[in-house]
Image (cartoon, rainbow, N blue to C red; front, side, top):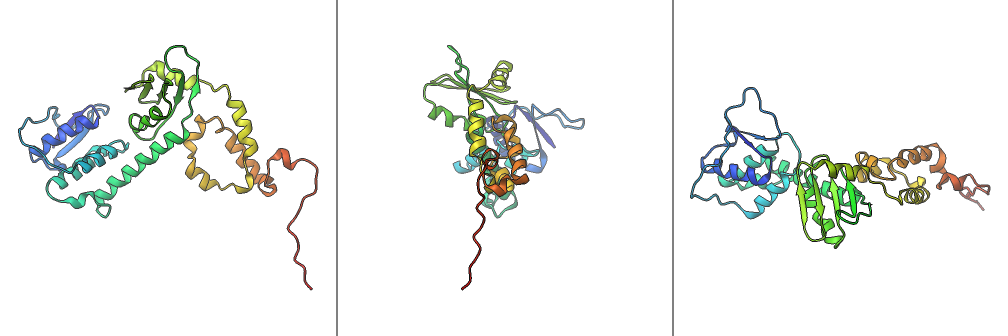
Length: 278
């Protein structure tokens, strides 16, 4: 068994994977371990340097794109599946890329999870203005389930123009200076502090608006939590309001079909008209 210890990046994995393919090392003889993982007591000596060779390993460009996307998915056997798919394709077994194959199904499942997490970042990340004369003008804190930040953050670089901004996560961070995107892993402590402690001056106004436009009669908890997972609530201004509004909806507001402030006002309740017979 060969233990390959590397820095956890796709580029480093790709270099080692190419060397192993040239050495005809099958997947079951390789133990992948990023430098972020502690060494095991019974680990074999690490295979630290790729084998130099003039030979080339030819695989479809689309496969490399798929492997790079799947590599962003945080799972226990992240790298072993990628090498197994790469090995099979290099040996002429193209079914390893198909959804109907066990490995292919897992590969595309990871790609789907990564793309969904990138959508979550775009939808639920909230920038807070800090009014800095130098450095970032807007900052945001986000806790992604997968390593999507450096890829998904390009979305904001395209849409925020020359505005300077910073996104920090527990693991990494990106900073846009209006011209270029800078990536840091691990996230610098000052970035984490700046992003996690920033407050939106319009947060109270937004919460008032959100609370008064909430329609309890249309509440469907399972659908809501599917589209807005609970793990994001704590970092959203309206997050603390959602459990309260859901509780009030179950307690009667859902029947009234309106907010508590409106339902408490005097007036005539209009019920369902009774059917008439001739």
